[in-house]
Length: 143
Image (tube, rainbow, N blue to C red; front, side):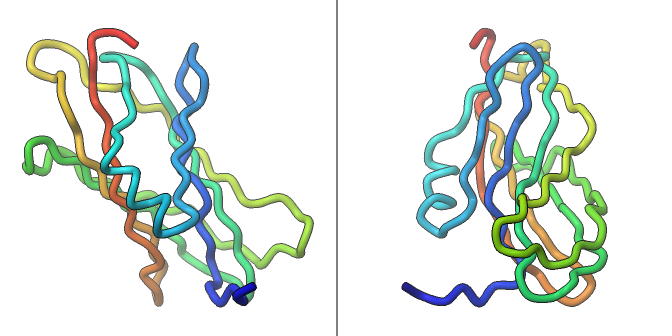
């Protein structure tokens, strides 16, 4: 078994959807991340959701962890945001992973919003760029 050398291990991006079952995107391995952009999740127009990041800090304290997100539609940047996640100390074996939930967002609604949206989720602090995750969602009229 290989020894884990990463200080921060990002495990999942979870979309907590009002009135629906959560959608969990596994971002723990390169293989699981690769599949995300190939298989977009389906979101109903106008639905409200919260984004939750699940991660583990292993070796050293991290400060100023940021979540950066870019949304594109047909290759055109439509939204860019940056959210401070905070500072975290390493967790001991057996302790729960960290979970950070961001405020509610609404899936676009109205004419011309249906189709695929490509998202890049990035994680960085003042010293390190940890991970970029490419994933996608498809806005539909119904679930």
